[in-house]
Image 1 (cartoon, one colour):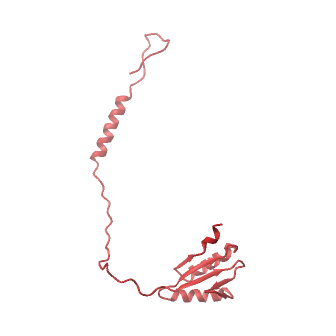
Image 2 (cartoon, helix red, strand yellow):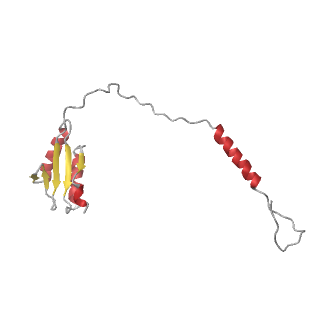
Image 3 (tube, helix red, strand yellow):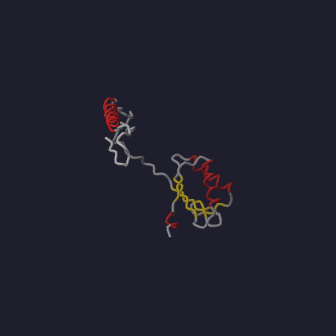
Length: 141
């Protein structure tokens, strides 16, 4: 309902449409549509292992400490690696082991990222899968 509060004459025709009933009808139709749509059940079929009491693997993976010093010197378990060819040999040997050793990469906080990126690229190129960063606490201060 509209109310004319103005200084116009009573002969003016009101040209506005009352949209309240239209909105009510649209809401009713929307509710009916939501109710009538069948529920979509989404399920993923998984084949779970049956033997839940299997013993854990007895072979613990070997841990290799790989450090990159501030000047780019690479240390494999505390021993300096003289060149990239020797590092490639170490990484090839690690990739060939079953299970692969866990390589803990610990870059010095002052080392350029270029040196660390080259070590990571060599590890990826040679097939080393288990590599992770350690010593992040040195960056917290």
